[in-house]
Image (cartoon, rainbow, N blue to C red; front, side, top):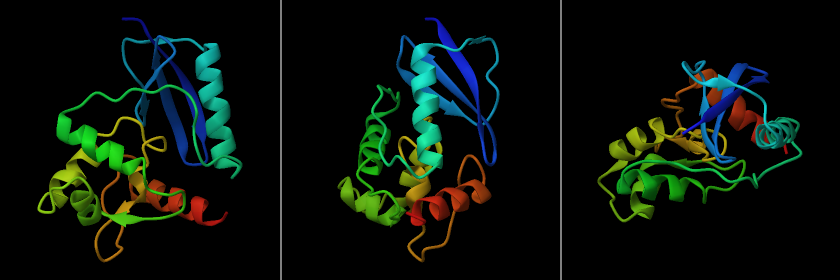
Length: 152
C-alpha cells in the first residue's frame, strides 16, 4: 500500500497526517519513516478541517478515516466518538459504556493505542477524579485541547 503524509503545524508543534488511498489512517506526533511526504487533495482537506478545529470553527470532522485494532479497542474507540465536544468522561465511564465495568485500565491502554487523536477524541477521557492522565502527545497537549474546546 502507498502511504503518504504531510507535516501539519499546530500551536504545540508538528503533527504528521498519514493517509492511504484517501483515508486518514494516522495522526502521529513523530515524523514517519519510510513514507512518501506528498500533499494530496485529501490531506489538504484534512489539514483545512484541523485548521478550523483549532480556530474554534469546527467540532466534527467529515472525511473518511480508518482505525485498525482489536475488537476491544474498536469498542473503546467507537465509545470515544460519542463524547461531546468540550466534555470529559472517565475511563471508568467508557468501560461501563462498552459493557465491561472492570476494564478501566484496559480502556486507558486502548486510548493510548488510538492512532487518530483529535478525530477519535481520547483527550476527552480523564480519571474518575477529573485528573488528567496519560496522553500520547503529552499532558500539556491534552490540557491545551480541553481548554481549547471549553472556550466555545
